[in-house]
Amino acid sequence: SQTIHQWPATLVQPVGSPLSLECTVEGTSNPNLYWYRQAAGRGLQLLFYSVGIGQISSEVPQNLSASRPQDRQFILSSKKLLLSDSGFYLCAWSTETLAGRPYEQYFGPGTRLTVT
Amino acid sequence: AQRVTQPEKLLSVFKGAPVELKCNYSYSGSPELFWYVQYSRQRLQLLLRHISRESIKGFTADLNKGETSFHLKKPFAQEEDSAMYYCALRTGRRALTFGSGTRLQVQP
Image 1 (spheres, rainbow over the protein chains, first blue to last red):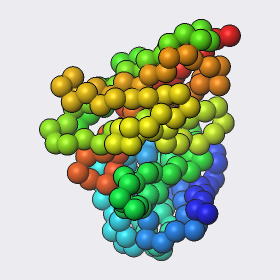
Image 2: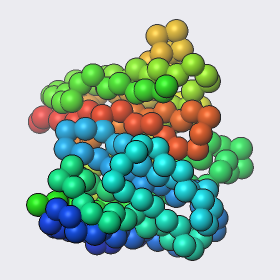
Image 3: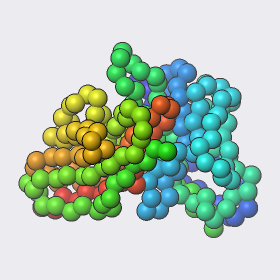
């Protein structure tokens, strides 16, 4: 069966420090991968998505970047964190249509980032 | 641009009462709509999708293109339905656009 992992689960970082959040998927190949952010009191905002190794699409201009060095690995990074980067970060994966059914996105447990 | 609106941040009902979680969308093309749910201390997961016309845990949702709505309904709420509910729209891209979510509280 497929599983998705994220780490760390929680992170407290000072303003100006770098960031690296990792997401890995098991049990599937060539998934679409996504990074979402959930700010307090707000919905899920898509940050990046990737349809293959080295292929990253950015949805909103921001202080963050993403990379996909391997098929089932997705990394969210920042060189210098801002206070506004605080939030709950979710990684998700999906496949294309399965047997004619619309695809579904599967979410990881999330990382809570607090920038102080 | 596509947008999903969930006007209620919190919906509180008593056990056995009907529930309707509102969702309106804005999209010029042919939409695919989903409801995701997050129970306490669990991951966000798919509840149902409009194209399947299914009933999951007693919940149904009908796509109304005229009103651009996809409201989630259940005739008799249960305490275990308490959770955060997100409406989501898939457009021509692969990713989803989520609403801001509605917290459903079912009181005994």
